[in-house]
Image 1 (cartoon, rainbow, N blue to C red):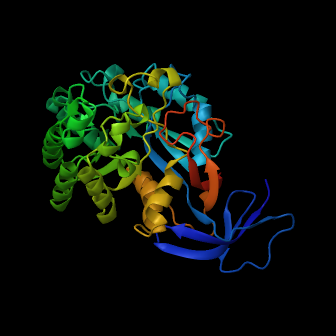
Image 2 (tube, rainbow, N blue to C red):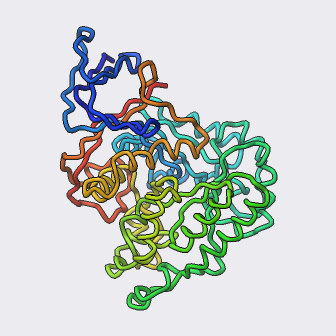
Length: 421
């Protein structure tokens, strides 16, 4: 490894809200040696890169995604997911516990941490399960999992018992560890795959009503407000949910919230194609839901954007829409697609997008982000928003290719990431 000099790169620092063009010198030890409008002297054999037009910012962080290993290696291995994360600019990814076996015991935490790739510039964090085997009934030994090194607790599935949610928040309050919950009443959602409304009637797909999310969310907010245990609300997908979260935050309820990137780009109008790669859970919202989610990001009601990378094999997805398993991959696609949709037209600033994908999710995971200053260990992503590429299976690093963007021509590509451990 040698010193690297990035000349005239656009440096984004969401913590200090600075967006400037500078030279950045990164030492061979992975430490940021200098940041200056112009660096005129550098060590011999330094690799000098002309970065005019390129963007450098904190490494991206994903709040929740699913890996196949162990148990479903045909979908995704830890190594292939690490490669996909690096290709997408992510230096940290938090993995949901839905492996086989489930991450509900300390020995499974140990196994996962031992098998995470160390030679690639990405760190995997582990969400520990809340209930044994993710069955939603019996709690795991929460203190043992916390001691084993999980980043927080989440089943990644709805908990449909208010009493169980209350017990979880009471038990975990002293630990002050992140908790991520998905509000959804499965008895109301049934097997619906599209939000109720005109689009559902026109497609003939079974409806999943808005109240399946909002009724569960309203109950969760009442419990959190009473117990004052901080909670992260994951997979927000409806306009009514955004309003409920905004009102709760105004009252001082200790919550943060996120939605997935796909819910910002697609809506139920797009389901007329019956593309199985648009089959998500929660389902894509109606147009007014998508508009509310975008506004929620802009005004800070929604704190972070999650990838929710969920790989499935070709065979699993080659079924009728309503029978397809929900979820899409996204680690390699999120940054270029959100940049082109929101930053390039000027709706969001580059800092706003970068913050929602880096420092905000890091804080939700309970990790304090550091400003980009001299002397700091480099945890960075270098992005070229101009370069074109094709999302072909032969190019994507993931083992699975379940995405509506397969073979699409995209603009914007991550050039390199740095992660000093």
